Amino acid sequence: MSRIADDVVLIDTLLGGEEGITAAFLVAGENPALVDPGAETSADTTAAALEARGVGADDLAWIVLTHIHLDHCGATGDLAARFPRAKIVVHPRGVRHLIEPARLVTGTAAVHGPALAPLYGGLDPVPEHRIVQAPDDHRVVVGPGRELQMVETPGHARHHHSIFVEYAGLVIAGDAAGARMPGSGQHPVLPPPETDVDAARASVTRLAALGPEKVAVSHFGLLDDPEEDLARADEQIATIAEAARRSAADGADPDARAIADEMQRTLPLEETVGDPEMIARWRRLEWRDHCALGLETWLSRTR
Image 1 (cartoon, rainbow, N blue to C red):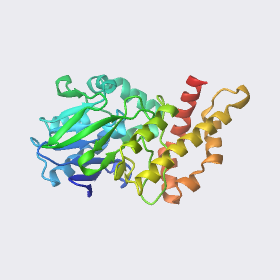
Image 2 (image 1 turned 30 degrees about the vertical axis):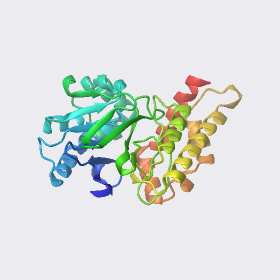
Image 3 (image 1 turned 180 degrees about the vertical axis):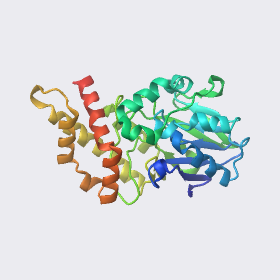
């Protein structure tokens, strides 16, 4: 655990037992909030981290979700049972997946395949009465004069929120500003099935307009320079979108493999992610392939 802003602590959820892949965020206050509890397979790790910070079973008031992808939300049902006072705050499009998660879990397993799906696990159902639907600009009160602002930032998914902790000058961007794992550089994360390039770029612009002093991404931690890094995120999204268009020039059907090849020519992992160990991690987790698949679905939908 590490303090990243005023009363905000980053928790490494140790996805797959590895450090520095997926973060959760504890926002302290009279009504403490946990942003993105991590995968179901990380539930014990996240619960132990809360206990170590003195957050008992009856203390946690909120579990706030940036979006309904299992690496971010899979532990929600498990932790909702362990922390019975907590309300779960989620985009309205995500509510049905918390109540009846079977379709989400099955779809995720299909994307990741039998080798990677066990890394994330599933999602236990959440009782409907525990869920708070959070439209754009919804506020989560953690204490007097201290609120978390839900900022709708689609593109990675239609149901994606970023969290503006205004009093701390911090944006928790989820996946809206891409990923940058320790010791490496930024890269967009645009998986299927809801990739929307125009929405993703508009979301980055919206985050920049908030003027945050700090931006944290779920994979993994604080960016170095909010203004510069958000501008880079926008530029990179535009670059890989253009690569996808070129791959399907002359009327060819969008194809993820062709898109991945063109992305590698245009925005190579060696120049963006940089660090060899982290490049190997990207490939092992298949994030680059998922980007190509996401761009394929986007291109098929929009051309």
